[in-house]
Image 1: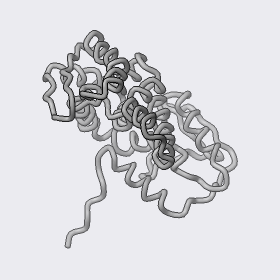
Image 2: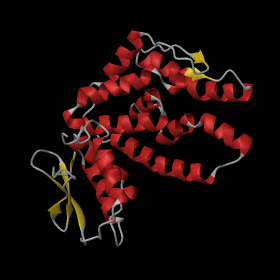
Image 3: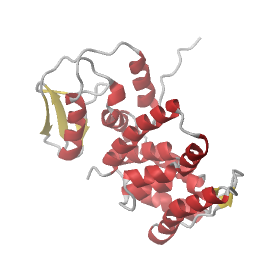
Image 4: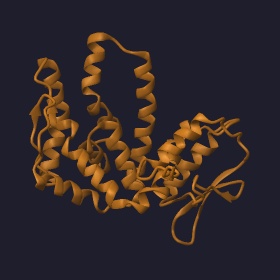
Length: 255
């Protein structure tokens, strides 16, 4: 029997991180965390003067001082053990360096595919209050995509799949193409978390804050909470994902 292939693609690093989080957490072994500019213009994160490596032994080099300091702060915040679950920026950076940089076209294509079934294009037929909330939160972003990106999307009621105009998807591809590996990683995470490439791009372009995009992505869920009450497990999961969203937004603004 042949040996199974290791995971590849934009989610490979996340799979490895999840496996690491199931293992016993390593003890914190360092005292000082600093960031330092490199000769190639990137910024390294140093633990007691030694550069941090990704799980695949590549240097954890960030494209800006701001981003390097934010990653360094995650390492400073670790107490007696190093918990990857509390380090979303480090995880996204690892993904950018280990996976995305070598598969830029594939990751970009995945984001465009998300746009083809974007959350914002599927509207509730009822109740009227929910439909009105969706329109209030989502219509301005649909209009922005049309006016600023040249991407005109078709809307539908219910969950029956609709085919978006090829021209709209081409405009999304054009918007994604200039991004570097770190921005693309942040955009992919934000798209996955919100179910909307349009919301993620709106954050990248400064049309929405991360909090505004997050609220727009949860219009349906918040309506259900109002009707039936909160679920503690779902609330914990959402809080964890919000931390991921904030990290993704910071990656999107790394330059």
